[in-house]
Image 1 (tube, rainbow, N blue to C red):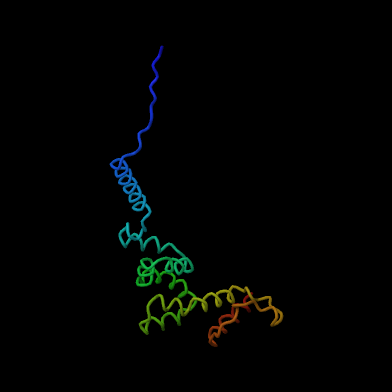
Image 2 (tube, helix red, strand yellow):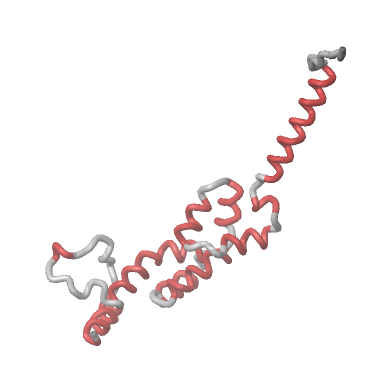
Length: 159
């Protein structure tokens, strides 16, 4: 006859519970390390390179993500300069004036971004087929100076 022995799992002792607790804490801490913010894990130059790939809207949203990201994005002119140069192509006089006044690239971009988009849309003919004031789309008007309206009119006449 076979003699059967009952295997029972012993109740965890306080030592076993302490070991399990330590192991669990170690695993959780490893998990937290793996989930850390990339701006804390990478050198600042690499983080700026990553942020530099974002468009203007995404860059502004990223600045709202955390204090760390905000500090890095808001204080670095490099990130705003490239976007401002695209505005420069359309609003050269305004950007040059703002920079001569000593304004940062970000402030220059904020001051001229909507104007450049609106001007670009007018010059491309996006609003060429408007027949009445009721058809004017929102954000299609901007207080342009006489020279800018002259550029827009010339573009219209060339179509």
